Length: 292
Image (cartoon, rainbow, N blue to C red; front, side, top):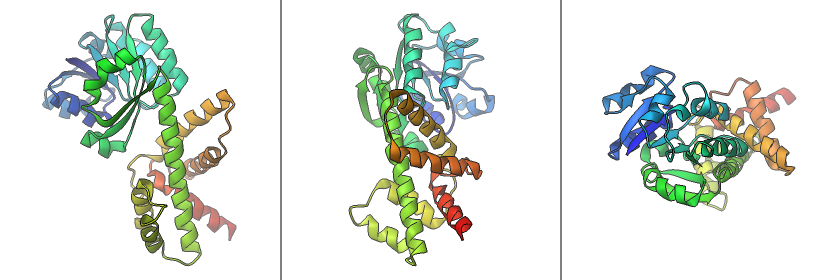
């Protein structure tokens, strides 16, 4: 197929390569032309504008930071919509607000263009291994059309419901995952303060009912004091902003998530946005230091 891809960051770049290696022709646009180089070397074609990507594509994937970015690339000046033909498809794999996803789908539908919101979980390692979990919102027939392409990117692919439902699922994913990171940080901080070795405590917990992937990976980073970003904390902070805004809109109480959001806010205030989210541990340590 003729496929377009916009958003060649830590997640998007390996995803685009998987599509190219799947035998598809790939057209690309990037704000920073240097990010195109490895994909151009692999056989992709660079374009001057998103509109030019749309002109060359039956399906376009976007993997961008925020809803405003997706909206601008899709519907702004020289946006994808200026090049996409009727019956083409946009698959947005960014993490954006559910209502933004629904709004984009409505505006594209008015032009005869289909859309799926298909945010992912698993981080850059899963993107590189094509083992992402993909949560999809949109019409079932459109999902069926895109599924062979999504299978090149992930192992767990679930059609959650209509447009916006994929983003709702992603918000739930982030709520649980970052909440678990905060819980691990509190447990390890408590163990150290109470005089137990956090390394041994984590080892003990890993063999019991508290075992989890978050304890394994994020807990490992905490005990190793390795806060180099796997996923930058600022992105989880952005995702929690989406979650809490949607909860406010719906009038849904999320008391635990609200507390975690405040910890993320504190981490941002400490300048930790570029660090891994496991650095939530540092917020607890700083709070204890201030209380002494």
